[in-house]
Amino acid sequence: MPHIERAPLTASQALTAWRFDVVVLVALTVLAVGYLAGVRRVRAAGQPWPAARTWLFIGLGLGGIAVATMSFLGSYDRTLFWPEAVQNIVLLTVIPLLL
View 1: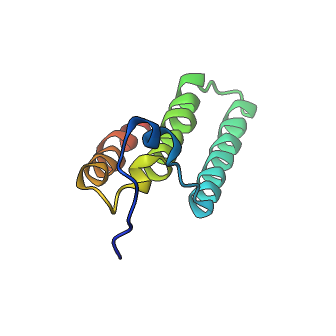
View 2 (view 1 turned 45 degrees about the vertical axis):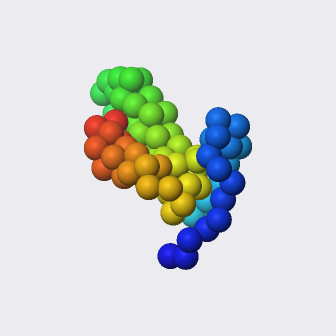
View 3 (view 1 turned 90 degrees about the vertical axis):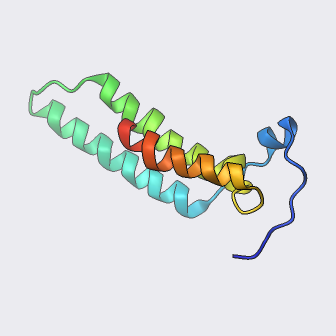
């Protein structure tokens, strides 16, 4: 992948350098809808389903994927080494625990 020239990473750049990726958004939406359909099915069968599990999966798990791929971590992953390293650590070690 070619090197992309970006502005230096500052605090304001970290907040404004978000890059919305339609493919990721569609995939996360499909996963969230599928998960919620499963939760609805379990609850309709009369079995309990903790709201905390749903929050962890959708809020922190899928939300964490969105942050790791579309925030400044995703925008600067080919420009600086450390955002790519943090992105890999989050996606490979933290997110699976939340999902």
